Image (cartoon, rainbow, N blue to C red; front, top):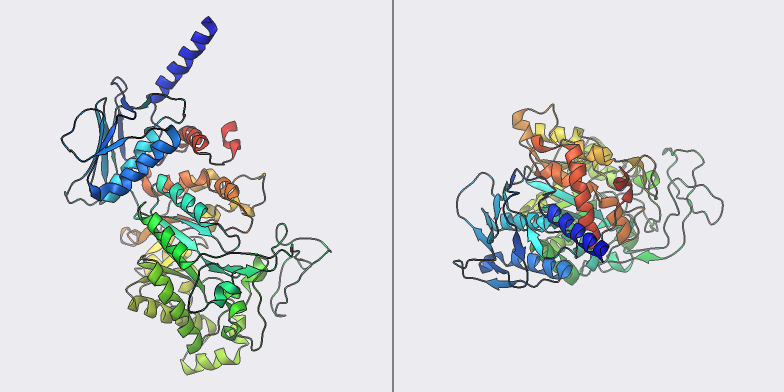
Length: 556
């Protein structure tokens, strides 16, 4: 009996000690812990006091408490109410940090005051990280703290490719919640590519009837070795591949899926309630094999029967591009008209990457189009293509974002550059007074291995946690004026080797934690050993939430 009592007291004492620890990711700008003060207790008698304008934050917090602790707090609008209350309020004070918030907690009440409703929501995410990470930690207590916080960068983004592998609406919403918990504010939704067209376009039903489905998927890493059921992609003779004897093996299983427009609207609304803007990506002029399978007349090869791509890697980089013609441009304008009606985002991502010029070189139609428009080479045709689409998007009151290849042949007048091939493209964009989003592949591609020797199938290049955390989006060679055009950064998650939600989680965590800190927290607050210490608490929270992550980080 004495042993049981001792064990109980040890657990209680341990939980009480935990209650005085504060391990928040991303690190707040300023945090003061009053370890001698009594904590605030949350139970079914706790009331949250806030105006209707903050309903998104109210619902998010209430749902979180109910789901993970079984606590159902009440809502009240009586601002003068005292004792065991959580008060949320937006002030009207002008500030240079529009999403700034202050969180103050003592034994009687918690106050979150912010300069915007978004700021309140970010304060709620911090409050969640002050909660215990165990369902057994009763009563639920919040330590006495004072926090002042605001983001460093305006663009804090995360990407997900749903073309190589498709993820249903339920998981997309879960993914958005992961971003919200880390104070991210943009979700880059990669909806089209060679491997599947994932968004319903009512004017062109074959995009999903045909383009959303492929007849198989690659087996293993590219390039594979094998001699059974091998399918080869025929390439122009001038294109060289490495290794010389590379072969591709696919499983022959029909695969696909797409989102209806009603589902898109539902997801957009869900994200908006979490203050996350969804940026849709419609790839052009390359990465369009799914489109061409549905509408082959838009390709550069007459009478060609295109197929939705079954493999990825360097081979598909040279797959066909869209023909530069008035017919193609009208088709894309019609597609984007429907897309822009679904997404209130002021930004539309149009891809623009990895467009092999060989297809335009060998196309008589393309060559005639270049001549008629005074374009001296295929790089200028690439620029013309992007500029023409930008003009249309701008006419609808929106701005295009493109991968750094849109710099080829001259940058479109109002475009935002997303720099993935290192930092060069982003630097060049800022030097031309254009916004840039930094997402260099070697640091920000989370489909890459987390460790030098990875336990699961991933892209070969490693993107180590320490390298993610150490990345600085503002390159040292930028002047102070140029640095103002670094809008922020983004992590990318390409799904070649990610077939299910558990694998998404494994690849995402904890690199999303590192990304959130480099984009939110002050540069001088970053400290990797301290981050790793806080990460151990975050892992316990992930255990509570049922999130899959690599346990190898716990070995250190």
